[in-house]
Length: 449
Image (cartoon, rainbow, N blue to C red; front, side):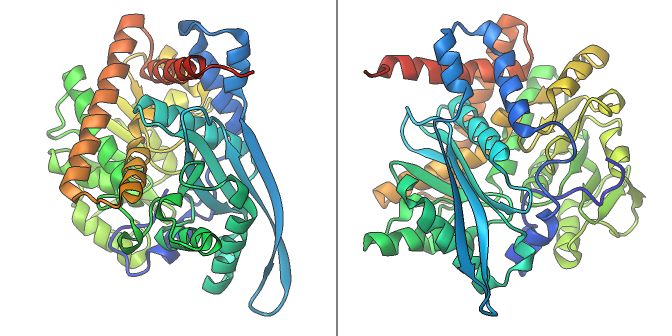
């Protein structure tokens, strides 16, 4: 990637006066940079773990594929009276453990292969942290910036109506993803509830708290990343105090990672987002930077900083590189330039399989924390919200954060132990753990008839 015009943050900046508008503005460029097909990446990552898991060929074929996929075309009346037709998707990768869960994204590049990949990754993410969800994913091929708020609502409600045979608290639970937010999840919940004739809070997560949303949802992915990074640094005998951190993508994920790592003494030296990149060797004041980004919609132009490109950030000699922007960021053509000691995937498909192999050859000391472990905090807190909605009994933010930490640390411990036992990477170990759990559940339940 040459320059920052192709970079997008994964979520809206916190503390903004208009988070929804800001999220769309920062994310419309897409979920994956130029590179391999995301479904091919997902399958290759799955297959890389198979030598360490004893599975029958038929079960391998089953887990490689999606359980079901729905493709829909639906009309929406625009504000000027025109009728436009949109294409949408909902994919369930694995349904054996119970309800599926996955995000809803709006983007011009949404397609079936992307949905299949995301659904598969969500299955492994849930399994790594031992959450009884299967993986799902959904989206609409649309540029959300081209829609008014009323058009966005009509599109959302029509999409939900079209996929309603696949929805329900015990069937499939939607969550926010690229270019969707709390308001869209509220429309999802209301559309299903109106059709059922009663409130169905647990059909969506990431909702506003008055509609059954959970405390501690905002920033949960970033907090989960901070928990596992702290554990990793302990195991590597690295110190977070004074550790140099670079973050690509400064939305809700990247900014919260920065906040939580700064609390542990880490030093944020470089950041990039859609509008540009900045560098300050003595460290950036995180809270001031978040305020600047909320006002200007970019980190670029922050005082007393040096402008940098994406290539500069990705090749910077830092202790920790957090990638919370597009997929396909570290690829075969740039992996050899990476100098970070630790790379954290803040989203799916960030480091391609070929890049993984190159890093293993040229940078065997570089540790990669895979997305299915590092960024599982959002899945965990979505599960918490679903459980609370089903019980109509809600937890405090402190309780949510404490339970999140326990689950993330336990998952990291299991993955680390597997990696050491089998002399494999953390990515492969995470997949081995996830696939083993899913395969065991499938065989214990049985294949009928």
